[in-house]
Structures are given as structure tokens and as C-alpha cells.
Amino acid sequence: MIEMTPGAVTLQTLETLYRSDTPVRLDPAARSAVEAAARMVAEAAAGDAPVYGINTGFGKLASTRIAPEDTATLQRNLILSHCCGVGDPLPADRTRLMMALKLLSMGRGASGVRWAVIAQIEAMLARGVIPVVPSQGSVGASGDLAPLAHMAAVMIGEGEATYDGARMPGARALELAGLEPIVLGPKEGLGLINGTQFSTACALAGLFDAWRLAEASIVVAALTTDAIMGSTAPLIADIHALRGHAGQIDVAREMRAIMSGSEIRESHRDGDSRVQDPYCIRCQPQVLGAALDVLRMAAATLEIEANAVTDNPLVLVEAGKIVSGGNFHAEYVGFAADQIALAVAEIGAIAQRRVALMVDPSLSFDLPPFLTPDPGLNSGFMIAEVTTAALMSENKHLANPCVTDSTPTSANQEDHVSMAAHGALRLGRMNANLSVILGVELLCAAQGVEARAPLVTSDRLTDVLQALRAEIPPLAEDRYLAPEIEAASAMIRSGDIARAAGTEVAR
Image 1 (spheres, one colour):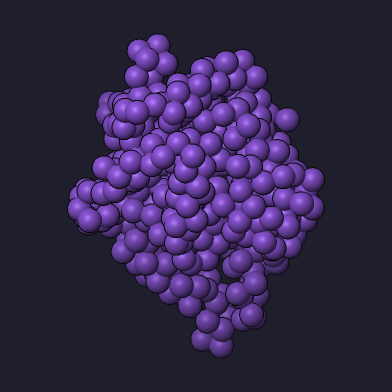
Image 2 (tube, one colour):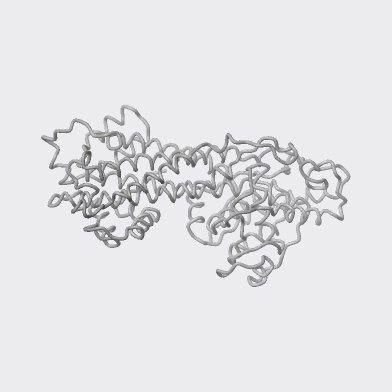
């Protein structure tokens, strides 16, 4: 069980939640603040003064008053009317993370929901009731309305959920898990569907996966550098200290350590006719380091957002006020997602050039054409390189900014939106593409290093080769490569390659 303190949860904890199905709950100390806000909402709902979303309609219908006896119906109707999502279901790991983020937001005691609403989400997570949340339909303001409505629908016995591996009606999933549907009180439906938790969960998942891929790219880049007998002079610490960027310094330091002791490197330190390597070898710390620092900036934003209150209106208990604001606008998440996308695209762009370098006999410093021992009869990694080019190009298109693409919605009441959901959702596809690019580079670099025998690479890169060859043999002659590309990509995604090299870069 992971216990979360609202306002103080770290990225490390959130990644643990993302990568496991560990049950989660809020620190019980948060309950008093939550219930105090709920009491204020109950008083407002029974009063005569109009308070948005509590005794009024929503959006353009905010001027319509709702009678106290109709508030429960108002909240239920809100959930059902907003269940308009389409597209493939959000993966369960992201849905769980989204639910945990909603707990954190409501746990700050400014949403006005009862503790029973929080307990319902905690119980669903603990017992494996995972709402089916369509992945399309949010523009990132006023919050992720449609996706969060699909989550809330299961809480009230509507919608669909998965339970024990099966997809079923939400009411049935609750029943099998020994839970009852909850009846929503004043503002509770609005508190559930207002907020950035869908966008933030997808952006966090994109960040966590991108960081793993970035670490793997450092390892694979070092293996490629040895495969093409590249120089390690551009990794000298003094070069990077003179520029001063942390990411650049980190990448150069790690690459030096990974390649230390390589016989291949020592064999051409003197007498090499090449003066300089291409940029994809010489500028690796500058490119990968910049990507790391961009990911770090996005991480700082997303950690704040994960702990934020992002629904509307907000209950300011100490001030005795319930006020409308705009914390549901996901501009911060949209910018962070766009930053992550740029980093992912650039990691893939330079990796693809390293693949192209290795398969080209005019550039690879005496490696066999397309890394096959018998070129002509065999094509080796010729088309695997083409696949990396296709995926690199796709990621370039996907990396175009989403946050600048606003469009008015809701009868122009919501006339500027963040598109953070688009920006965050596309990160899953981009990371999948990058893992394949790096997987192909891993296969090519391993083939290239082995072609340098009897010279051997460093101890840490030898460990990487052993891990790879336990799953995928060298390519002696042409064979069906698709499953091997997927297997290598899976080793990249899982972190196995970075772990084999002992690589872990501080965030």
C-alpha cells in the first residue's frame, strides 16, 4: 500500500504507481480539510445565493438555478452527459495513475467533495475496478471533461470497467468487487470531471518512458561509437565543463565510463586517418544532454501539476469563500508534453543517423555493407535502417506543438483551450517509435562490435552484448527480423539494456 500526502507526492512515487498495481490511499490526516470543504458546499447548496456548479447549471448554463432537491440529479446528469469519449481505451496503467492524481487533487481540501468520494476511488484501485476510459475527446480545458466523466461513471454504477481481466458494465464490476455505487452530492460530479488528471497522467507516463529510453540511448550510443571505431576525444570532461549544461556533462561522463577499457577504442587511438567523426558521433553529449535537460524541465512542471488542485469552483475554507477560477486549464501540461515530444524526436533523430552510419560501408570504417558477412546474397540490416527512418520521420511530425492549436468550444465560453490531452496522448506512440529505433541501433551496434573481433569492447558494453545475445543471436544470414526487432525494442523499453550497462542518470 502506498500512502500519499496531498501536495507532497514525488515523481518517484508516481512512477511506482504507474509501473505497478500497488494499492494507494490518501494520508488519513487529509480528511479533516476535505470534510470542512464539503460542509461549506452543502451549506451553499441549501442557500439562496447562486454558486456556480453547486446550485446552478454548467458552462453557458451557469445562470440557470437548480433547486436544492435536484442537486443529486444535477451531478448525475453532469457525469452521464459528459461521457462522450471515443477511441481506444486508455491503457490501465495510465488510468490507475489518473485515478491516483484525482485523489491527490481532491485530497487538498479545496474541491468540496465528501471523503466518501475519495474512499470510492481508493476502493476501486485496491480491488482492481479500472474504468474503461476512451482516449479521445478532451481539449484540455475546462479540464479533461470527457475522460474523467467515464471514470466517474463507474463510481456511480454506470459506464464500463475491467475487473479480473474482463470488460463489463461498471455496475457489475462494482458488484463483483463488493462495492456499491456512490450517490453524488453537491459539486461532487463537477469535482470529479474538472481537472487535468487525464492529460497529466498521460504526460507523466510519457515522461517516465522517455527517461528510460534516454538512459538506454546513452548505452546504445556508446556501443555504436565503438562499432564504427569512433573517437572518444569529444567526450573529454573539459569540453563539456566549458559549456556548463548539466545534461551534456552527464551524458559525456556516462559515455566515458561505459566505454572505459575498450580494446576497440585503444586499437585506433593513434594513427587513425580520420580527423573528425560525423556529428551523430561527435555531438552525442550535446544532443542527448539537451534532451535530458528538457525532460528535467518537463518533470519539474509535471510534479507540481500532479500535486495541484485543478477543478472549479474552488472552496477556500479559511477565507470562507467558494470562487470560480481557471486551474482546470492544462496549459502547463500542454507545454510539458510538447517539451517531452521534442526530446523524444531528437533522441530518435540522432539515433537514426547512427544506424545509417553503421550500415553504409563508405562511412562505417570497414564494417561490412549493411552489417552482413555476405553482402549481395544477403541484405542484412538494409531495411531495418529504412524502418528507423520511417519512424524517425513519423516522430518529427508528431513532435509539432499541440499547445498552440487552440479552438473555441462550449458556445465560446471555453474560447481558449490547451490541447494538452492531444499533446500528452501522442507521447505513447512516439516512445514506442523511439524504442524501435533504439532497438534496431542496438542490433546493428552489437553486430558491428562483434565484427571487430578479436578486439573486444569494454566490460560494461560486453555485459550489454551478453544480455542481448541471450535473447537474439548474431545475424549470419538473412532471416525473419521483425520478431527480433520487437524483442530488442522490448529490452530497451523495459530498462534491461540500461541495467545491463549499470547506467542510471540522476533526474
